[in-house]
Length: 167
Image (cartoon, rainbow, N blue to C red; front, side):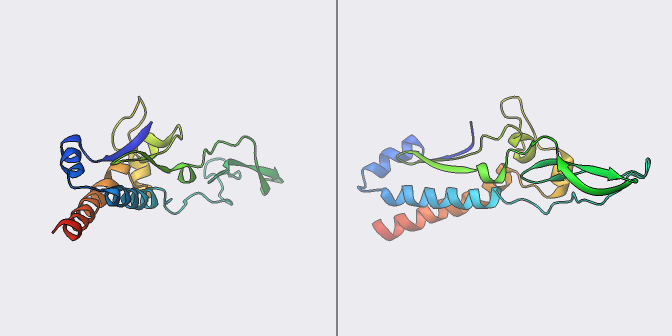
């Protein structure tokens, strides 16, 4: 399920078709979608790191390693001598963002990671989400925030191209 769709609306599409070849609109939409993807697939700096100890139990703690999952400490003499991954849990959110052209005047930016809406959506999508305050505090961008920033730029690029071609 795509989290974002950029498309030329039907009433605009009919007017544009009367103007002739409009491949440039698809190119501008694709460039805009790639710009959105480039901003939404950035990870904020990781706050999880090895070498921490619990204040309560004074035992070594695990940490979350991006792209792998939870790393569990290997403990000897109450010290962590290494870490192991018991079960990979990461679905690599950043690498799963894709851009696809669906048809004339329509480009889709999407991600099929199951936990995506909880990490990068401001609204509930398919029973999942929205982003928690903790993830917002860590610096994860929501798709909606990126679109609000990039949307006007995409529209401006299309208007500029139209003016160049038909002014």
